Length: 261
Figure 1: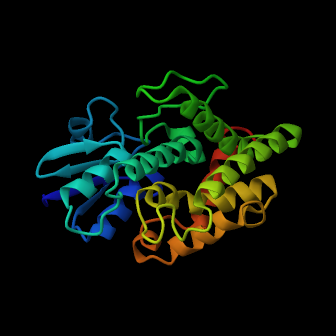
Figure 2: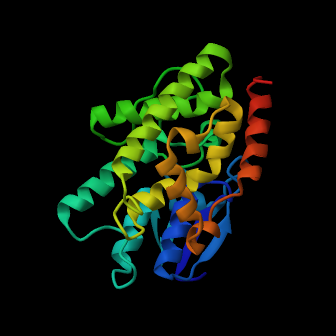
């Protein structure tokens, strides 16, 4: 086993965050694909006995769980390479706030179906009831994040007026992100960093949202769309994220599973 091992699943946007961070830092690691819908490997069960979910980073035999925690750990464990969080304490706090916003509001439909990805937020959408979060968060932040999670999945799960309402909510939160991005190249300014890593994997899910709900993110939030293209131009992102067509195929399977079509 290499000094750094990542337990992951190919389509997980949360695992992709870790892959992007490791690539940005130039850290060599061993990638281990997990069968998240089948029998979990003994190494995963041993490394994450609490949630039994990916991603898990193992560094010198010590496991670190939860994608945003892993990204912060990578930043601190290799501090001499491409900082991912700003040095200023206030700027770091703001980056963490918006990464938390993304973590709860821009979550993939597949996470809804499998419940095998990140657990820190643990917002279940298989029913219309919001489960209790397992991590303490600011209640207002949780409210907005749950809304995005809810309405993002509703874009492919619902039809008619209900889907239209979900689309309005989704666009509203995209505009909140766009307001934070402003005229900056990346969320932290000129440098690609923590918030960008948190959100970038979801760019490949946007096509599914647009196609299922009949709208254009480029029209609704052009700055976010342009930011997404800039991220995809980065080798670390392009090599980590899933192709939008593959994600759309997966959403099609989920729609059949949920009886949407």
